[in-house]
Length: 268
Image 1 (tube, rainbow, N blue to C red):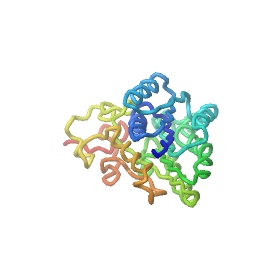
Image 2 (image 1 turned 135 degrees about the horizontal axis):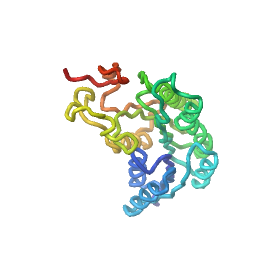
Image 3 (image 1 turned 45 degrees about the vertical axis):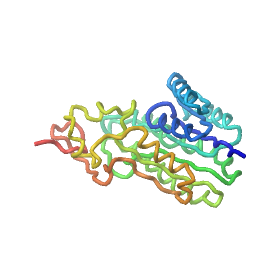
Image 4 (image 1 turned 180 degrees about the vertical axis):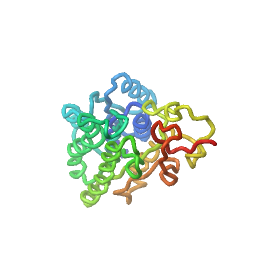
């Protein structure tokens, strides 16, 4: 008898890292519940998945909203094998913490941490009942090093990793594993390589990225696929940096022109 397909939920699953995760899990045979706020992008990804022989159901809406949480929960029809809490953003951003506002903090809280609590709370009972499941959260390397212009973003993502550790301890006896990835330097629509360079000469990536290149979406998706798979059956409670080595080599410096901060050395 053929093994029943897993049901996997991916938030922000249309573009960038989320899109690559969606495609990988669907290619592995999962029924993909794809949530995204961008209806057009979600439809394109769904079409790509189905043209490749996969199964995909889209749920359009902002995952920070309770209505969207309810729609995603309903779409699972009571079965969830994999939950990927992928949504997160450093925006809305301010020039400094002093210039930021409580309204910005609230939105960053919703985008980076609160929805992780809400959707996990909604879908975890189905995993506990089946005594099987894998949750993979999206944190950031900035949860483990200082990022001067985005301290609130950093704080909420540190919360994601702390939540990952603590929930893993709590639900492991129920057969549920909880892990996270911590990306850096992802060349995506959200952070395109041109924006990351911001005027720096090409060809100098080796001076600030040990693997000497920017990350492609599938670099991160491959680690998520591993963490969600039986190959990681004895791995839980960890945040895995997927960063080309930048966390190992991290260090922030004030720019020579005093226009903000950089973690990239300047040429003489």
